Length: 537
Image (cartoon, rainbow, N blue to C red):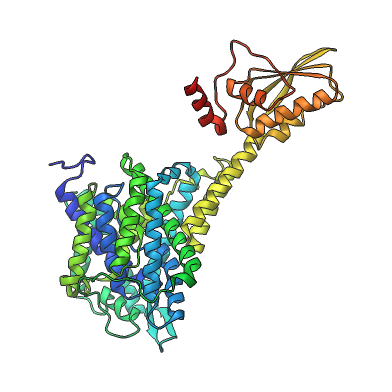
């Protein structure tokens, strides 16, 4: 088959996969619009603009972007705040914060801050993926309920009656079965697309089937809900008091920008692992930022990468940029022309697709890890998963995971500094140090030396150790002062040139031996300075 991109994607596979993704985007964009408190058209057109731009110029071919629950939850604060300022100002404040968030993301791309995603440890990645999988699963459960609006402020949500509920469950299971077994017959057509088409045809002959139109009607508070709409015209957030509310706008914008960047880069990393290719984080930040600015200028609610739709695309064979572009174009056609047909698709077919995404996304090997990996890594996985699921704040979940991982590393590493005595005489004692000497281990290192009760001449050999940061250097310097005050001589051996240079500049009282077999590593915090001095020499 004709390969038109370096990713190995084909036009046929990308178009079919894009069509499948476009169908899966519809209920998600509508649901997220309701979460943010905006009309369905706002979320739908956001998915169009974000999907088109990020697929065309983003850092990860095959990744799908659109309106997401994480962004919608934060965006709702802007909508509610705007409505408090005046009737009809909710959308204007939303557009303002999305524009500023897009500019922040552009700055992240310009200053190449996307590379910091490489610092995210693997347990955090597992917790992130598992949390999103659970969140996607929980996000489908409202489709098994019925919402009745009592008045403008009150509504009643209850589980479907036995008949409609049974039909819903049967169609969901049928959709999942088709997705699972159809690839055993042929892979020429994405099984997800086949499932949507076949279940839709079957549902045509079944009464009381919940469709996309049903969800629209309930979300529209009983009014005439429809996804049909015209192409949006450019807008500007008029009525926004920038001077008075710049603090609120900046706070919400920064939250949206961080959530968008982290979710997008984490999704990109997951797809990198699935496809054994590599995306470009900084380029994705630029694309996400530009897409959010443009989305706001055309009345959208912003968004970021969608792990569920991205996995649908990858599993359906979408590899090239055309898959996302085609999905965005088809979604636009759904809104402009084909909405009467799309609204008749049973929601059960799309719920079945998302359930299969959950099964494929969740890292089931997590359960096998219990008892086989350190408890600290299990704790990080669980913490990130729980924060993702219950707080719906992906940025916070990742930050919590990174901090916990760093603390766990510091705790474990601090116990791996060993000081032993290799020579013990009346006038000289030689200590050998093994492990990493840094801020987390300096206390344990220093506790091994008692200057007042030690012999007159002390030698500390760092041949099997590494000094990692300024705290380690300061610990050595402090030892020199302690032994000098006790009237004794301290000598250190096998320090790198960086360590010797920094200790000498600090005016240390330590006698530093220079040996032919001294190590040649650089202290982490001084790497740039060391390289600069080496270049000047």
